[in-house]
Image 1: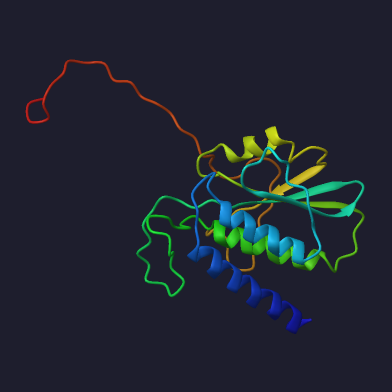
Image 2: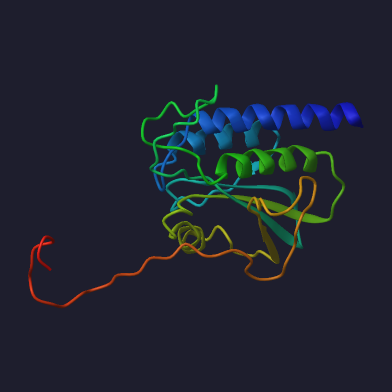
Amino acid sequence: MTEDFTAVTDEAIQIRHYLHQHPEVADQEVATTAYLRDRLTALGYRIVTPAKLKTGVVAEIGSGHPVVALRSDIDALPIQEETGLPYASVNSGVMHACGHDFHMASLLGAARALTAADFTGTIRLIFQPAEETHVGAQEVMESGGDDGIDAIIGFHNKPDLAAGEVGILEGGLMAAVDQFKVTLHGKGTHAAKP
């Protein structure tokens, strides 16, 4: 059992490093999508990504109900990486600075473990695009990627939990990505003499 856990862990670390080196910003995760699709296909998952979903992957294993979905985000941020890591981003101006590389690697590790699990129903994996621009979940829903789901578990790293701890909460847990616009009305001026 320890060897299996170690092998899965080692593979997940290698996957994370690869994904960290090859980040793509929201709705441009084309190579990431292909990479995920290839890995899931090799594990025996059915790729059921709706045609309307430009990037991201939806895959299933098992059949019938309940349909339980596990969700990870896949996009990176438009940030220049300056970490000096041996697996630093090779894409100038783009970095996995929010842990989405870790999320994808973790969900692929779970996907591998689920191939050997005995369960009733369907497990649907949703690798969601465009989380950082707050449109990816809507894109998945509008494409039908969440149709027929009985329950969904979305996960995100949470650095305030100790290593090995998992927190579970029904409903929302972390702050949402959102945008707002502020309009100021006033007299035109120069910053030197406001």
